[in-house]
Image 1: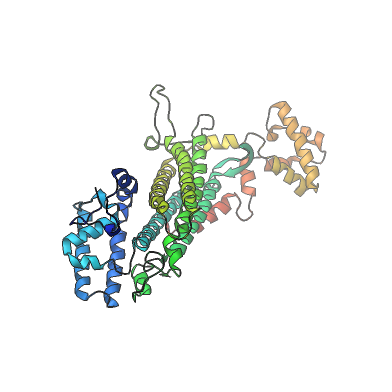
Image 2: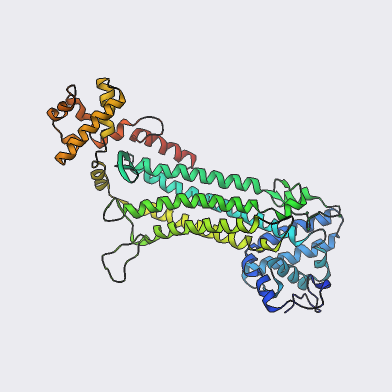
Length: 467
């Protein structure tokens, strides 16, 4: 089938004597993807028509007819009655063809001083701007859930890890707030991306601009852009706004994946730090006892998908000369899928964090293992006995070795056993060898003590307007 508008004419076919093959139509069509930009396309057309009328390029009557026709098309899109035609390639041609059916000749004047090149990328920037706003709101929602759970666990002690080996006791609230900080940087990158993309390509036409006396500032303002793009070649060919968006989503998804991995570990029988509710778990077809953290595992996998979508878009763009090439048609598919996947992951993670059941007693027991207070012992030797830290480190290592031999914790060594390693050790050393004392002693800014975590929770509630 040819791409027709009636009377056997194609939208672009004056140059061609024959119609495209069916396979060409199949590979060329993008309607199934870009129909998601229908409202953005109508918004762009409204602004363009108003500007054309204001500048006297089309008549006020033509503009009135165009605006009325676009009103009807928007209503058809909302109520599901819009007659999509796949042979018309994309949403832009579908809207234009439908407008001609509704209002006749004035519809043909809408495309004056405009090309599909600047039309498409204007719609795409509008869509991406809205998608970034939605993702920012979802990330803020996840931050709110993390802050709430952190506030409930300012004194819950758990093991902190390096190399997945027990390192020092930390509070669960402190651990959760680490992800709040990561998410804040993600939100900042999303905001920065939205600010940088907020320039309007409309009026750049195919690549060289137009000879019509258009007002690009007027259309930019009408569409909420900060300014028109300053170079028409750049305007129609640039996709770095989408690349930046997907790179940002990829980083943010990596943070989600790290938290998902923690949930997988924490909910295992070996850790038993937490349990997911039935709403966020699945079972086994053969093992009735299983409670699988599938939502967390899927987030882990989908983070790789988002990174792959970013790499696919980068691969499509990296070798394109100016200005437009059809390679860019896939930019919408990749971007839509990345945002859909990321937003789904954020919603799932928020649901898990809101409802996960922590097991403080198990966390505390695990924190007490693995000589997690060894650094506190070394610090005590420096602070109370005046040892250089390197010597204190050596003495502590000897005491750890002694405790290992006895299969006990540091706090279970007798004073005599400690004094056999260093004669000046006294009974006050035992005051620093509990996990609670260890966590509470870390009072530097940004540290894990309940006092500092409570302060951070209060500040985050204010920043996120949770109170």
